[in-house]
Length: 256
Image 1: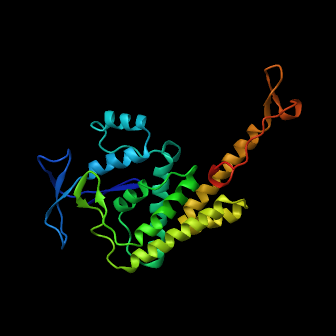
Image 2: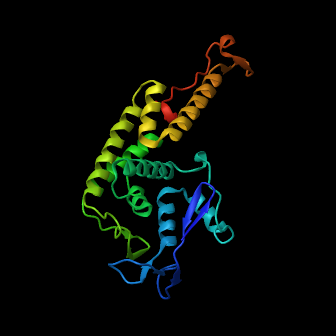
Image 3: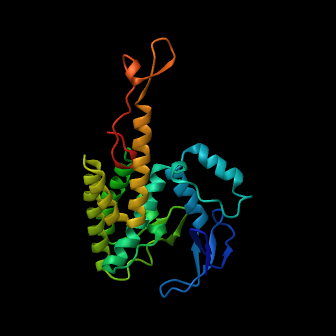
């Protein structure tokens, strides 16, 4: 069953807690030709593992305090999320667009998240997303056996792929993503970069990214017009001997 909320949805599967196992291990009422009806799983344990991989410790501590009182937490704006979490979300968007475009099996989000969480960290959003794509490309091309770190009997790769060519095609798309991100990390016009974003993540993402980049560039430009005067007051760049200029930025705000 799927519960739909504004800008999100929750997939709900009936389950029962299993005694004598790691906390929150469950037996799910599932229909799968290659496993029993009460298959073991631990989605909450996986969520905690994933958080530990991508979130700062202070955020984890806050989540533990509020977990018992907030049934469905509000979605956070992008600036409140970690770089790796944003990379995973962009990767899911890329997956949705390109799986539909090329008509191959869509990798489940939990499987994608498990592999992506273990990729080397990149500096800045684009560099991190490129690191994830380059790390995943050769992995997904090979036979997969990916377990839930919180419950080894919970095989995250048991439903994907349905067709062998899906692994090859996803690997090709991830390599394509890495190459295009290299282009984004290079110097170029905003128009050209917007076109690349549109191809990778869709029209809405391109428009939002272009708008945010323009806002950041305008803000940095305004900041660059001011400098601290020798007497300690604030003056304009024209009246100051050494104005404080804004640093150069690439698309999505990654510093040069």
